Length: 447
Figure 1 (cartoon, helix red, strand yellow):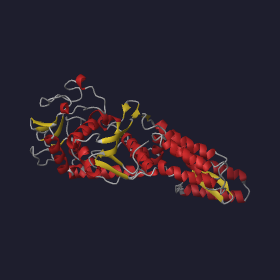
Figure 2: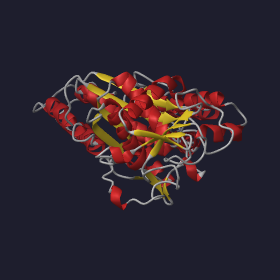
Figure 3: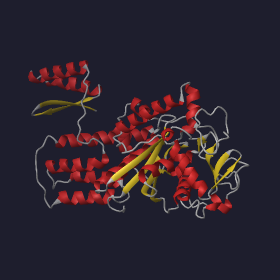
Figure 4: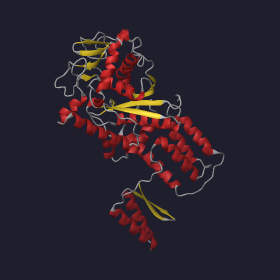
């Protein structure tokens, strides 16, 4: 990974018309790893995450209703209430997954003036036309339109990416500002030079990121599904408005999380949220662990069986690290600490190779040339990127009946009734707890 030192800027957004599903959250985990890695490398960081609370249509193109309005109507609440509720839900999920908050989190509804100003620049520079009550972007005027997605424009026919629109000059043109709504009862409208209306949803990302990061910035992230239309149109708008190329130096996209029936999507009407994962008995960070086991550029195959395997591996890793804390040995044969520090940086800087980084962690834990003090210090360093709370011991809530069994077993052991002690241990194990007899006394942990 290479970029100019102390100049990294990054933009990523979220639409708050529903709960984030675990596929969405996989992308935010990858984004968090990128953020943490850049900070670890000493870059200065300013990250912008847009909150899309207006203008996200049910299609990536210019068709369908605004998703915020669809949800508001369905739940019989105002659009602002919907936005507030799902924004809070989203950040509750990201906090559970140890995803760091960006420096700047602007809302689309608070930046309508910035969007209008951007549209005015695009129009002034000759890249827009007004037809049928809407302001359109003229993709034919931008010679390299579609470069991110490597689109072959001469092969695209009307309706290839979008529903047919008689007002469009070209099939790839898109709306910058709506004054003639394509559906009824549009609740959110603003005055503009083209009439009362609302922005096209590609517009808000370009306008807000550029407002806070400048007319050119370093990195833009997102999911691969945004490449063909949304990110392609963001580039077109920004480069037409600012007359600077490239608008963004590096584009980094995460692959889909997929199930048996394909990628997970809210539009399908059935998706898995983080709360669903928690309700199934899994820790949120077990899901983060699952995500780190597959490179962000590869599809992640999700199943409850895979979740079980990841949760067991995560728990075993935590237990193994907890065991290290009971030893205070300290040695470093062969300068292995420096080796692991250097190799760790090599692997995270190799396109955020988290599977190989986890493999390195396991190798280090097995290395008999390091003392426990050195291993724990390395774990602390690694976890600044992994963010798996590897050194944090969870407080275990022991049910009253289990504690009574533990007390009875201790009494049996003191009375040297080992047959009864073993029987009680088996009963405790059946209830989901494991006993460890140490010099300091008995320890209890979950299975």
